[in-house]
Length: 322
Ligand SMILES: O=P(O)(O)OC[C@H]1O[C@](O)(COP(=O)(O)O)[C@@H](O)[C@@H]1O
Ligand SMILES: [Mg+2]
Ligand SMILES: [Mg+2]
Image: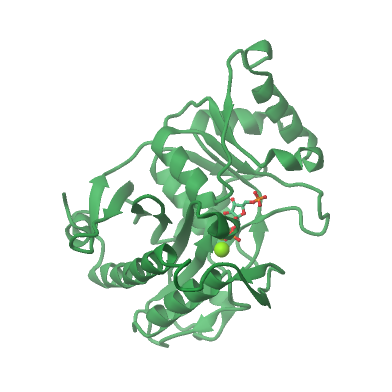
């Protein structure tokens, strides 16, 4: 099995980006270890603090964030970072060539039940001449990402990543400590009979999504004429990994549960990186209004509607909005 660096060179990834990716992955190996030892190291449960999203931070959210932040800011490759757990962007090396947005621990509500969690990252090039302190430099659309990926801390620790030449799967080999390529150019099947949504929000959804899901649930007795199965891991990394592995549609639609906050997932460090991975694997990643990666960001913690996965099924879902 091919090691990470030769696999990236095969995709003509520039050396400085390979160095940054290696830096990111060094942090994920440490996080993977801390996660596996969390019970023993007193890292289960919550802190008393809330992040800027108004969510109570888990101890592991904070540990993973500090680990990731420190290793990136000291690397010399990074002009600034933005993180789910940081109020605003944090400046790094004024000469740093890259910007990194990340979700240090995705699926935090799964930590205490020892279920699937992960780390999500998105890399853009820094804008020449822009100040490392200026958060506006992050206002670049997803279609300008040079790399995106997630690491899934599951039975095995898996890296899923793209640099624009397809989406590849890697596994952390615990014997020599490196990520090995196990699946190159994965493809999301165009059609599926599996959907993922938090059904408990149903009464708060807009009518098109209500109708779409009702028809899935009606299965062969309804207009779709076939049965659909449902899955919800409550960690985007886990649900998207299933979609990349065997197809499916994943959606976190708009809802009016909290009218002032119609969307749940964050554009910069959840929706954009996952969209790049899904599109590079032949899937589609949309809101009901258009392509996620064409959205011009306005703020670091901006939330968006998410409908992504098997291309034909995403198209069918969107047809309910027409
Ligand atoms: O609690 P819900 O409504 O099931 O939402 C689950 C969603 O929230 C998230 O956990 C949000 O991410 P964080 O855990 O990083 O805050 C997603 O991973 C997941 O898809
Ligand atoms: Mg998340
Ligand atoms: Mg998180």
